[in-house]
Length: 336
Ligand code: 13P
Ligand code: SF4
Image 1 (cartoon, rainbow, N blue to C red):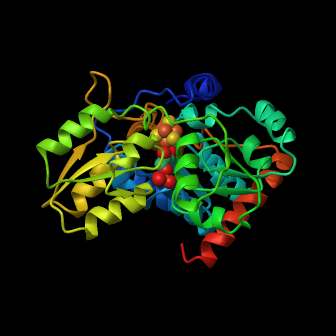
Image 2 (cartoon, rainbow, N blue to C red; image 1 turned 180 degrees about the vertical axis):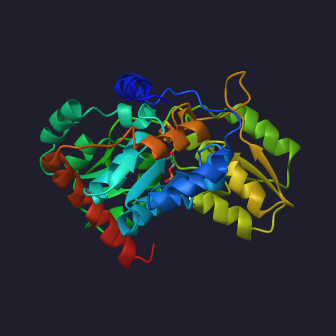
């Protein structure tokens, strides 16, 4: 490609979210990505909701906690984050001197978007006696206003680390917050945010599906609404759900989370059947439109050309780092 074409494509990255360059269709992207990993000392970290091809080229696939832990300890010079923006941003907060790239800069998160920092700042000021516990699915601006960050795999342990009478604000996911209130016996004040994917499941269709598959275990992510969670045999983070399907003797599972996780479930338990929980619309899929903006082509391009890159104001980064460090410390002590 000539320099002028590349410069023009790079200039449009902010606007488009990715490098819009036509690739030679005969290019072996899997081999190219392996070559780039070596050449650039790059590590590919992917969330379970990424498309199967991306999961298959990743050096590490995990839930939000696992990905943050990997980002903290990596020795790579370049972190290629196949996930959504808040995840890549967390990796950058932990690695200010490393290059962090994401296949599509516009891969956002409806849950994170439901909590704008200026509004949340005002809400926090109205409750000065409360500590702020925020789910990692939030922007650096919200992290900077928080005392500690949690993920779905450590939220219970971290909330339990506060004295019982400590008033707590939990943001931004009201469903995870309500679930943690239930299991810890707390009455945390909940921000009214939710994930568009986990709120779409149909209680009626799940009930019928369970009747048609009486031996199937119903497993759900805690971002689901309370009536759905009430039906669940197991509730956990994506890693928790995957491990449950590996260790539980059942042969059939109805899975209430984004469909990307089914790839690893089927890979590790080929003798078992996995049924995605049905959404309340006519579409047969529970795909996260943000996660699915990333593709293998975009992943290759961001590695090859080092853009889109995550950049951040240093003052914001330092403020956002404190509650993440606190999360990582408590999780390590708890053996998570
Ligand atoms: P976990 O993988 O940490 O369970 O989070 C799920 C999710 O919604 C990420 O966006
Ligand atoms: Fe955000 Fe939900 Fe997509 Fe996760 S699945 S990235 S919480 S919108």
